[in-house]
Image (cartoon, rainbow, N blue to C red; front, side, top):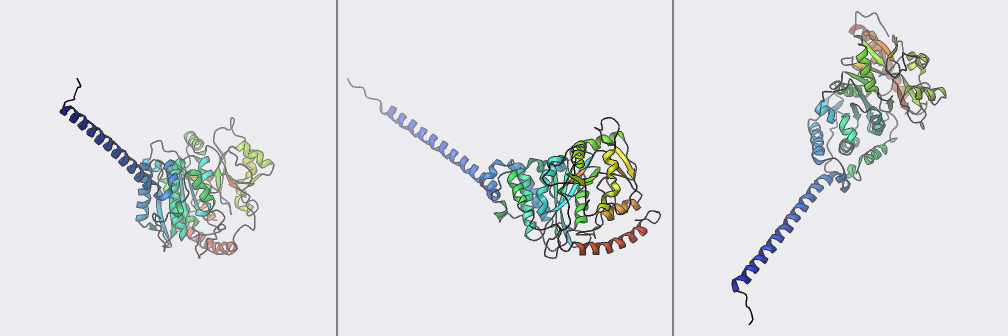
Length: 432
């Protein structure tokens, strides 16, 4: 006969089916929740950078940099000595500075720029690959853009994140803020190359220090901000302009020099400066530099604009110097007393006299500090194979219209500065 399943068996099957359905619904729900959470996370990430940001830094790392930046902005900065500028120190703090690793290098680089030249930081960092402190000057809408792009650099560029401390300086009447509500500065930024391209697009908007709006570029204040921060992590600092690239491996070679030779109490190490024709790649080592020098593709820095400003470096002596061995190690080639109007670039220990911040715009801003070192009793030791190269020949006529007037005003300031040195160093017999 025909077999009938017991009633409770079919009920059991139904219950089993229901349980399976519930389990499936739960799985779908959990999957939905997880996708939703992922979407929310991605939205939080992309609120500033758009979808491409998913390929950027790890969220925890990014958030730490964002919090650091927001904290720096929330302090409202500190006013400089004149009360005319507001300084946000460590707007961007490198992983190196945040960790203060015990194997801290002997040498850091301090530099300064407006946002129009911040793209130069890329090639500089490629060559330097050691701690780098940069003071950026911005005013008006540029202050928000500088903040946004500093954050973008820290998110997308591992090299910047690892080594660059960035400080923001703006006029004291303005306060910088994080443009969280305004997504425009971040639109289309998806990787490190994109951030450098955006910075590159800023170049050439303004010529040199012609910032408009009656705003002065406070170069010596910026140098002091960058150098002061760099000194917190390294005992020696090279101060150079952002468009100057140093010779390769300088931090390691300089450390070797320090191990072999104890610096004198008042000694700075001069790094000879050159300029190169725009199309050329910046040489890495002295031999390559000298080849370009022989054929006129490289020449002494400021050769056309102010040959006397660099001539005391004694380029012919440096070019023809033959050291011990193969010259693989860095040495002091010769030592010079300062002569007017020399403005050398040099590596100095912590605690050097600061740059005089009353000098702004063009003229006498670096020479005033070299002059003070001289009066204070410093000697200038020229390094055998280290150098700096400015990209592009400096030529007359490329400067903004007010340059000569600024020079004239700063010349008056320089006379007053020199009088002040007599009072500051009464026992010194040196004058400049």
